[in-house]
Amino acid sequence: MAVNSPTQSPNLLIIMNDEHNKKMLGCNGHPMVRTPNLDRLAARGTVFGNAYTNSPICVPARAALATGRYVHDNRCWDNAIAYDGNPPSWAHYLRDAGHEVVSIGKLHYASEQVDGGFSEQIIPMHIEAGVGDLYGLIRNPLPVRYQSRDLAHSIGPGESTYIEYDRDITARTVQWLQDHGKARRERPWVLFTSFIAPHSPLIAPPEYYALYDPDAIPMPKRAARSLHPWVQQWDDCYRFDSYFESDAQRRIAIASYFGLCSFMDANVGRILNALEAQGLAENTVVLFLSDHGDNMGARGLWGKSTMYEESAAVPLIMAGPRVRPGARVDTPVSLVDCYPTILDAVGHGAPAAGTALPGRSLFDIASNPYDAQRVAFSEYHAAGSVSGAYMLRRGNLKYIHYTHYRPELFNLRDDPEELDDLALGGRHEPELEVFRGLLSGICDPERTDAAAKADQEALIERHGGVQAIVARGGSSYTPIPGEEVRLMGNEESAAGGRQS
Image (cartoon, rainbow, N blue to C red; front, side):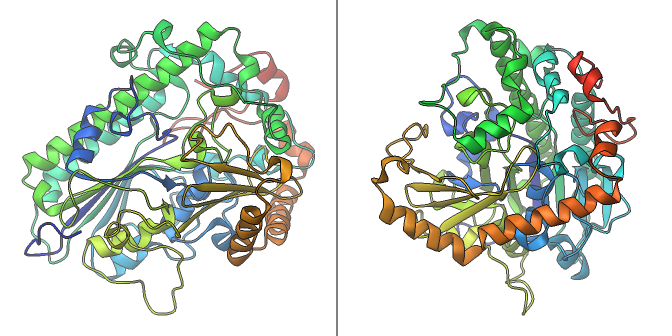
């Protein structure tokens, strides 16, 4: 994969965004979404076409990224059990080795007081009120999350605190590069910049919303048959689609999401321009990725939380020293591969002896464009899930295991839209048996499901029980730094209250 060899180890700029459906990038072939800056980054770097989150929800995904460990290992199960600095992150490792490691923007750790390993946290976002989404702990029975009606009602052109926050993140990143990026240091720096867009609320700056005509947007695919029973129960909990009053309203929501993708891309462009203006582009590895995707109306589903491609797959692009330009790697990878990649990028080898991590450096993976035997793994134990869900991707096949429910199996080469479930009808029992064996080699799905629920039930009790959490209310979104948390009870949520 080596293309050039800088005289010293390069710097590393990690740009992360939130809830980005990987299909909605120009470089991934979307016919409408305009992302010229990320397209240029892809052209001068390598696109990992089969990248996955290790859990399709914010806090567990970001904990997996930080620790290089699967969710069942770090036990950050949901959006109320966040990373608290243990086990050590890649940031700890590099800071202890003498690197400057700085974050700007969303982290979604337990609190700002947590030592996540960074030398400095600039305008960090962490879980709301230091406790996160307590509603998501309630899984038996699943509650109705009336707060999710906000998705259908907060759409179209306009401004939001999330848009303001992303602009601030961009400005501070550009300023940091101007002030610090070119300073002489014995060791390369690592800068982690983390945006919100295109995460809901689906309100886009007017100039980016204007790029898309809602009437020209085709409606998302519907499910080929009734939803899988596990997915149906998740949808009965969130009810996102039921709050839309028409397809015209759904198209406005999708146009807003497209606009947010373009807004985010413009912010990335400003950062990449600053990198070039400071003479840093030639000696800085850039890694762009998202924490998870978004169903965006496919099958009548919105938000994340499912193991379908729209939700579980993520965009992942790497460019810079040692990265082959204009390349595509189809080997399955996931967020846990970022830990060894980050160490590798700035001149370190494998983590310390005794640190058994499942990931592998993307630099090494990219030396072979396609490894048909490599497995990417994801799991979900969070809001709306009646039981644990697990995904394995190997070669063309993707297996979804639902604890106590039937599995799903898709051939993504022949059926990229996941409309033909091969697990039905007993046609592919040998393949299912292989995947069951692969899953058992990673974790025991039933014991893991029980462990997650036990941790969640203990936390529910520490907060006074289910009724106390329901009476406390829930929120639509995590507030930005300095913004007051707005909690809504079920009656207010059902009546249409929303967080500004």
